[in-house]
Image 1 (tube, one colour):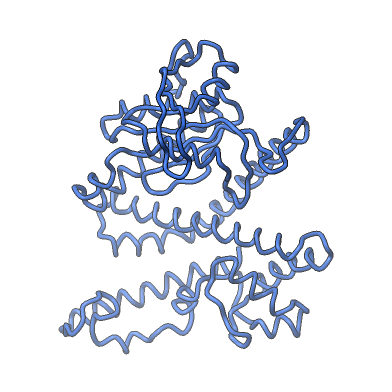
Image 2: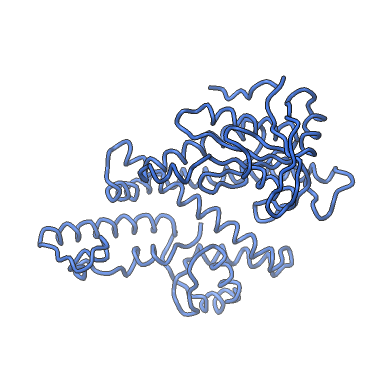
Length: 385
């Protein structure tokens, strides 16, 4: 993994000396609040501990000191400054000028390897930028997920304050880095293998719509009245609700043969390769989450149809329709359109039933005949617990 944020760079080297922290302004957010001698001593000790911990983590992750600027990489290793700037920005890091020394030997190798593929014509500049954005986005989310999971664990298991939990996370992380790194590579390989196989199946499809070549079931599910709920819960309680919703939803989607596209707070988006898998996932989400006393009920919109995929997401009119159906569904229900109902019935006769439905004017789409889908003779999803 390459580099680090400017913030971590400052913490790892050249950070503000502890002697220059006379008040708690920066550390506590309190302005014009003088500290007594003991408070200053305690703050200095915490600051020193943070510097040591962050420095240890950086030494393990960055695999060496920062030695190069963008100009150095261009002059010494032949990597165009433009490519370095695009690479760094696409990974999600703050831009650096051409003379700022920020890159390590490992950074130089990573940037050079990908740049060489572009210069050899294997990847275009467009693909180069897209792939690095994807890496930056998802690895950034993974890094945030891991660190916050460790902080949450320290709070719940050890009863620590937020500051204490974050310090414990920093102290614990070094012993986990090797295992986490190998798990990330393993998961990437398995996921890439699965998506390669799925792409292979698309080669065999006939009469493909070039504008919307992928045939998928796409669904959206969100918790009902979440905004109101968020006003009544503490931050920790709200986080627990979101964590449970996401964990249950991901389990249902995975067991049902689908995959999560993305989550945004109280909403989750999923895909399935067949109409019947999409129906099973959608109905199971409504059943299982609505029956969960720790969660509000969920509403689901499901559509079968053609779409296209870019940037780890899917797009198209059918995707938009699924999102609109979710927005008008009642608590605990699954809404589909007539085309999706027909596709599910043809794929699994008698598996699911739909209501007669009604015409609904959906924002940005127009009048659509929508139906409520329920389980009929299909067996409930076996969650294994």
